[in-house]
Image (cartoon, rainbow over all chains, first blue to last red; front, side):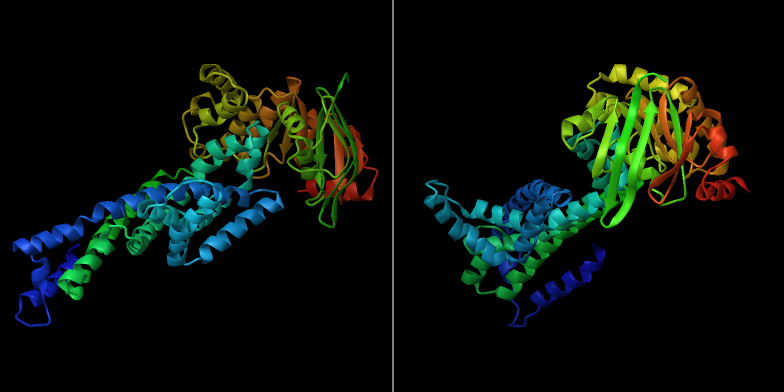
Length: 252
Length: 246
């Protein structure tokens, strides 16, 4: 963290100087209005984290379900996997968000279902879908890295496919899967910023709203970047810890 | 020789265009030991792997203890429950202790309680002469010990037939005999065994039937003494002279 201090100090010094191009007062914690603004901006943190965590959890489960057909002997199952991965991977996040938020309810209605999609779930569904294609590829690579002999040995002691996956393959593959999966979480956190365009009151949306009233984009967006930086640095530290633990566990 | 344990009739298999098995006929009686040898690529491993359906044969019939091996999951499961297999690369589960390696099949596939499975596991660990390694991980054992754990793991499923696919080929020379000793003990106990190996000392000692394969065919078969003393085909004679003369 210490290496970022000079950068922060520079920004602060710039703000303290009398130059008319700086207006750090908008987020100056020593003034009452500055403190209120900071609290307003940081209060989006909860929704950003909540959206990201739920989307990641769904993506982790969905990714496994998408990855398993890729390992099948049946061609059509592998094709299903391929089509899903290529399609989802090629849709930019913003169009997918619009499709889910504005389009999906129409499909639901035409099916006679009354399922409204609010910004919160719209964002989660989009992030989870978009990320699941990548998660699936991570699972596939991890599972395929386990030698074929492990499957064969499991078969010869009578384990079913599901049992082989659960007790033999996945416990070994998870060591190789978990670090890249955690890494993928950083992607979700950053992409959750798109939820602002459908009205989700997360970090970016709050920054946008404050910019409109205070007209201080440079200062407010700088703080926004620092907010994401802090989040991502915390996750990175977690990923590194996980990688160390996983390699220490290696008994092969 | 009483009943038939394994019967292969006219078995053929192709890998793409490559004809790996050509009209294989092989009968193994209950309690019999068959040793299959032959140059690499001759199809000997494939024969063994077809018996428990790790490979699928395309033509001919395979029967194990009277059950014909078909594509349906039920038959495959039934046959696999009676056939154990020991691999060249051991294929132990590296994330599980030796004891858990042995108990996984009995507990998950057979539905034994952990206590029952542990009793069986310790019994067979003692039989392969490593009762004190139960709590170690495979990576902490020598190759010879790992292969004996693999044999014990197969035995825990109480199979009627054991298949060995070059069980000593991946071992350092000084560890080969500890594995062969265990296999000889099993043979003397009456286990039905089909062994792919180049260990001709083992073959002489236990085999009822020697099978020599080359280019996907069974070229020669007979009692080990006959095959060793007077190989009928040139290919077999040449192969034996190559592996016996160092």
